[in-house]
Image (cartoon, rainbow, N blue to C red; front, side, top):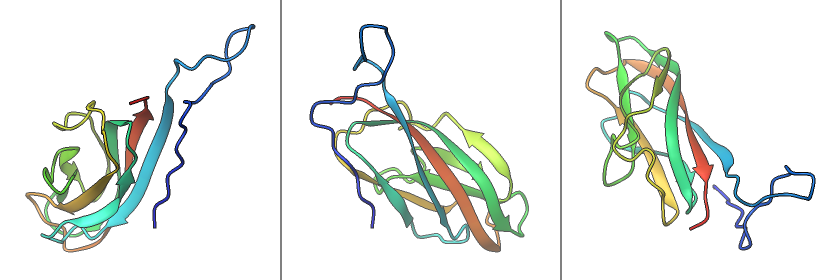
Length: 134
């Protein structure tokens, strides 16, 4: 179960001598792992409303296959955050169609096999995001 904390008055981050400022964003990371052989989407977790996903990192973990890849996205766009991300080694994706787009409602994130399947293991990923006011 994923829980999120809401900040109805925003977040204040220390800064200037006169106090804090609310113009700074807060960085978050949604981490999870999934079966890199699955043709069906597997839920990794949920990004909170207000999140702006900026990058996806793979820590690898997929095994076998020839240069296996995975896709990370939403139920409506299964590779919106990462298309053909390395499943068996460390890699970064920063060009998905849904990256740098603010989410207006809590949104489930899914992973599935990419164009070149692994034969086993579990691929670990991290979706980096910045929280902004809606």
